[in-house]
Image 1: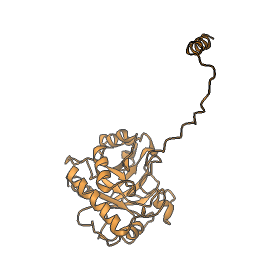
Image 2: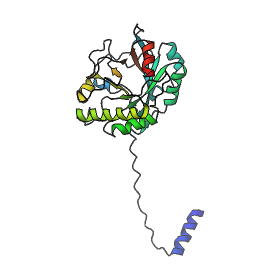
Image 3: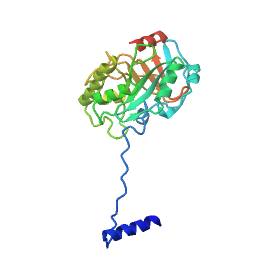
Image 4: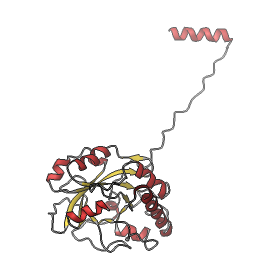
Length: 270
């Protein structure tokens, strides 16, 4: 009532005879930041490529080291249990595009280190949103760094099917190859290491093809959900890591390092 009395008094003093009420439109919802859906390594590959997605256990074999990769979808990971179950390395999602940071990154990245795992960070690329150098900068500044401590894998760039539209993000093979090259070159400048490249054979051969070759510098982290790996993407003669299953014994995706523990350490050391 006091408010209404003050308003009437103010109207009287100003000599206002007519009050016109303006209709203010409701605020438009702000666009979600790029990557807000939090796409994880293999999320789009599983949608587009046939494979055996049933969770199963693959025992450790001589000449390979089991590992895992996680994102915010796994929440707070029980790292001591993952270690007890046999995981010895992990990749943790750090960023996506230039607008998303994994809110669980610290728990996952530091927790894997604390139990003794060799771990690295990865970036989900959105090549149609910004150039490769800009996304490499964002990644390097938000978890994608590297140090020669024997516990840190080179940061990885996740290149797979576009979650929002055209498979190759509207880019030609030459344009996509140039995007990856720009990311790689800037990442080397920022960290001293070439990035590992996560992809599938089908996506890479379709979207990059022979436009550029990265096998001489970038470790290959390849996704193929089966008991047999099959052909590799153009430019690589062997895989460093095989993401062979989308679910299983460890939280997140299941991976195998192509080598023994000593060779895994050598990759970490550069």
